[in-house]
Length: 140
Image (tube, rainbow, N blue to C red; front, side, top):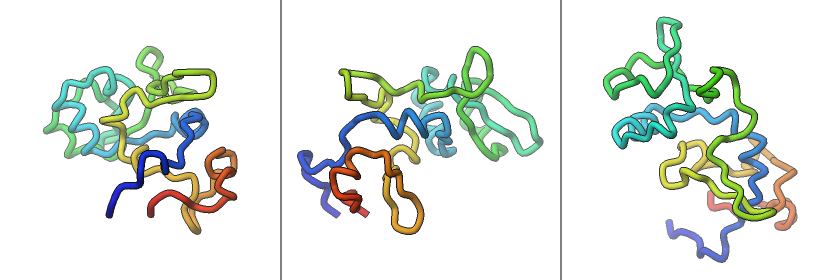
């Protein structure tokens, strides 16, 4: 499948989806493995892993071989251990434009996010979706 032309990119980079849904980011084991292998402690520090025995460990303390007994990951504040209110990787670049600070290695769920998926999701606050008349322009 051909990638859409750059000027056909429907996202307006307003950051709204990342500000609202960002705290719920849950990376895959493959995402975490990549971050471990690439020494991305700047990313790993923002996530905790839940083991199959019920214990929780900061992802920054994990090694690749530890991922076999992890059942889930969740974003958390590295200072307090509590939940975050906005994605810590979202970067404001102008008054109305935001970019992902880890775009090249962002979690799978961020890569595949669409504000409109037939029968599943409809994020009616998305300005790009409104501009498109609430019809899907994202490649399916």
